Length: 266
Image 1 (tube, one colour):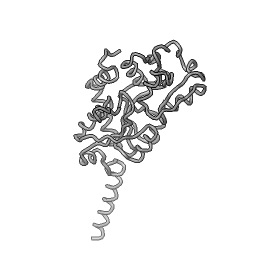
Image 2: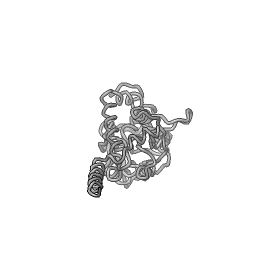
Image 3: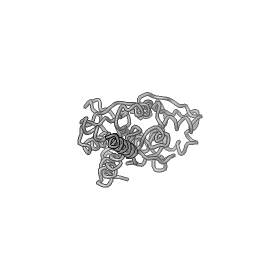
Image 4: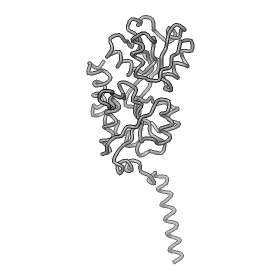
């Protein structure tokens, strides 16, 4: 009897080790399916990726539909969890949501603190300015001047880029990201360092704004989804989902609808 118990103990230990290293001791994908909803962190201030529509009282945008697609692929509903660029990483580390999606750039720093999916959009730093000022801003040197008012949202990579590369410019920090294009339009600021996606969107819907350097951005980046560390099965599921969305043409469809506002893709 003692020998039999000893054998069971050894087998149990072996199984525990196998389960530990295979990652089978936790399955966040099944947990989400059992729960019945996917928690998605969004900033809700980044047109055209995710923003809050005051008229409909709902979130809309490229990433909102993509998040809904992901939830559908999981067979669950989606619940959006508000976050901000300043608190995005902390909220991710604190597991306040299963995945964050709001036009989030893939960076080594973010990868050190959390998991990041494969990319579903190319992006890069560029500028948004008034159309009448197109000739003034040809490169970073022409922007890095005390008489140029550069306006950025607090806590994001755009603010970090501006502080690092435009130390001589008059930097204005504004708390509401989606208000910035309008402030440039009415002359409260001159330039916004932003992503190509956002610059093309605003220059497309506002005839007074322009994105003159969008075809030759200062940096080249990619956009992905942010997932708390340890959720490797959700990461694997998400990567397969993104590949399917790309191959099916869904990503191109969302580009036409939100980034190019149903204009011809350039």
